[in-house]
Image (cartoon, rainbow over all chains, first blue to last red; front, side, top):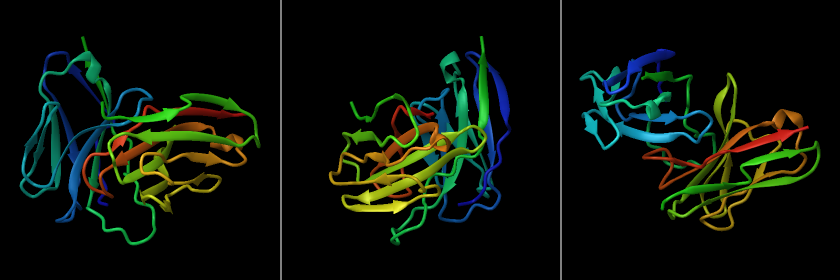
Amino acid sequence: DAKTTQPPSMDCAEGRAANLPCNHSTISGNEYVYWYRQIHSQGPQYIIHGLKNNETNEMASLIITEDRKSSTLILPHATLRDTAVYYCIVRAPRAYSGGGADGLTFGKGTHLIIQP
Amino acid sequence: EAQVTQNPRYLITVTGKKLTVTCSQNMNHEYMSWYRQDPGLGLRQIYYSMNVEVTDKGDVPEGYKVSRKEKRNFPLILESPSPNQTSLYFCASSWGQGIGEQFFGPGTRLTVL
């Protein structure tokens, strides 16, 4: 899986859009970009994923650059409950080959703090 | 409600006393996985299971066992816990391996004295 780079922390005002960047310059053609978040010591929560087109769901939007070397997660109207660590993960589909670790690679992520 | 449940949520035990952390999912997922999370090390995969009776080692399997006798359950067994297994443990499940959304349980905080 390609490595990702995220800023360690970001602040955002409540009610504003939070834009979280992720750099994945070595991404391969079959690798998807996933975003998860973890609210203090809770289980990670899936947010969104995409391959090359922009994606939107009820939680967020994912914007992937045309060259796929970076992406941005957008939380359109951030609330205090969106304060969490956000992880950008790049991962290819796998065919089971009978062994080998295959866990999601959670880096250090971005600690997003929503300010009232 | 679709969910992954873990029990217990908190456990304090002593070195060498066998314990089991249960994990159950109600989404008919084939794929299940265990992670541990430690400060500064992030989440690391312990074991995973592609389906019933199919399990494989993750990055840090030493000191742990798992079984997958039923699709919905994937217990984590510590035969002889040691203090270095003090950690926050998460179970996860998904439809298949390596693609799509993984659902995580609420976590089990284990302390081994």
